[in-house]
Length: 207
Image (cartoon, rainbow, N blue to C red; front, side, top):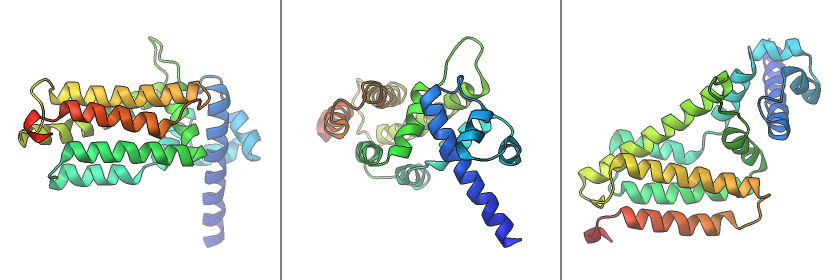
């Protein structure tokens, strides 16, 4: 029984690794479970044992790359933090470094940002990506609301507009880096961008 569980877990890992490659190469709409099965060296039945469709595979890929910074954010939301804007600044810069160092996570983020077609009739996969982005936006918004309650958010910004600016800046930066074939130093440019943005969000008395 233990060996069977180990084999099943190994197959699942192989399927997800293959899916990341196939989605990255073909986009989500241009990929199929058949292509994923061929790349993983398993049968389609083996994939269906773990996932009912492409959307579930995509969700599993996204869940697989939960970053340590997300745990920090969740803890801060629940227990409070004395510098929420500083936490966002530190966390986003660290995420950029992780992405530079980890090719698998680069592929997954490329899939999430670039690999789905967001048409009028959304696929399940595209809807999952929108949901994931909304969840991250909500977490950013809560942290910035915390900063506002501490009177450290500049009057120019609201929690909504600040969270949107950070999320759009990060997504746009990552998308351009990936789309351009990693043609510029992500961490260097990203750090300047994020530090400047967070600096503009701090109340003058806090700078």
